[in-house]
Amino acid sequence: MKRIAALLLMLTLLLTMLVMPAAYADDYATAVVKGGWLRLRDGASKDAKTVSAYFTGTAVTIFGKTGSWYRVLTPDGKTGYMSADYLTITGAISSGTLEENTAAVITSANGKPVRLRSGPSVKYAIIASYSVGTPLTILSTGAE
Image (tube, rainbow, N blue to C red):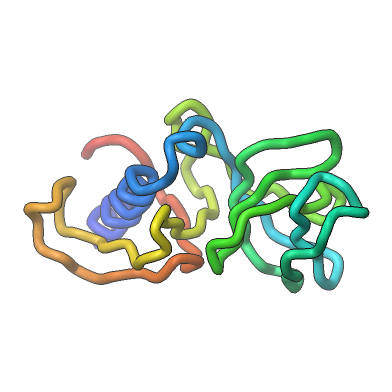
């Protein structure tokens, strides 16, 4: 059962990567907000306009870095910049290589839920559907 669950979680992440914008698909990391609440800004500066704010524990996906600011995708589908001082990196996916026990979050280029299927194709049965922002953990990688 653990192997099936791990494979299903892996498939979910892979399907997520397929619907991510191409610019985001190569290198990214996951992080969690720390220190109370953190502003999402529209630029890499404390003077940039605030888009939204997120409480401690919110998982975000990092797509780039400008100075001491990370470009992130939030669970509600917003993109912008957050100060690196208030994010704890929880895992990384770099150049298509997945790390085991990495915290991740469901993302979707169109904001729609991502379907978890019983196999690696849209021809397989849908097991469940997960909304953007749903946290998950990659338990293992590779084919079994």
